[in-house]
Image (cartoon, rainbow, N blue to C red; front, top):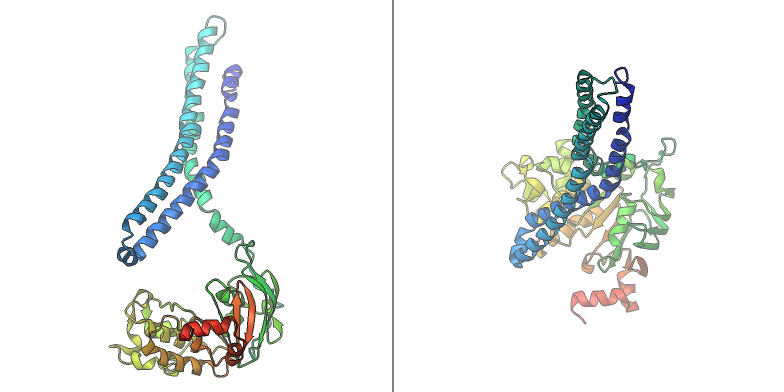
Length: 423
């Protein structure tokens, strides 16, 4: 274009800053709108997933209308931001580029019309310039057509980038030489918050000697499960110190830490596969070791009654097994690891009375020779603990044996009386 006519090229080049300005404005205004659109879409998916998974509860409580109204409200918000995103696309992307292309045509034709008598601009030159304008703007229009998709993808990938950019919390190789031998545990002034604003654990301090059992009790939200979360390093505590066998917990590799700590949760999770594969959990265990772990926790009694015994299929989440059977399989899975430390998070909360005796016998065997931290709502399940800690709003307010706490007549005593009906 410069070689053909420098002046005509100037008219076209003058439009390029406008193109970059449009793209800059689009990026500036669309980021927040696209973020809101993606956030509302996420809320929409969560609401839909919860409604499908909890459909029986919704039907039992006749909440279909309310859930539908909530879904429609979120859907309406998503539609609002999606329309705003589309409006921005229409304003700054292809329509704007097409308008600039037409403006370039108009400038060229106006210049030709005004100077055809004095300037040496032929019809052939104008035709060539129009074709060059097409070659300049058509690729830009094609790019801007996909710019909206690119912007949406970048925003949607933001959370993924945050995970990718997270620093590994593993200690340096030279420092990750710690080995858990005895299982002595000590918390010293540990503080923790999930969001960095509202404290969940406040100055938590306690110690457990090898082979001892301690228990944490308290109201829902008092911070019981958070102690296990920071001890397993699912989350990093903000201050204080946690040590095992006198060595800072951060000096242990994740592999060493989690291979020596057995965790049993309130909701046992079974994976699609077989009974044996759920006990083995992809560890290098022989069939005899799997069977021995099941016998240890008395899970072999119901396993051997299954049609294919240890090779019996396990459906998604183990829905074909009772809660007690799933919990026994979770116990066997933990015992198969031969852990030094045992963490029990409401392990008997959802067990019926008929199964509770079997579970309790299994727990007693599991606790022998292992340092154990138990979280319980049923106080009857932790009366034999060496020390019981009562939590309230993230702080330890009482500590002692079952008998000592009853004599104090404090919070633990009131909880016990409520559960036994002696109030």
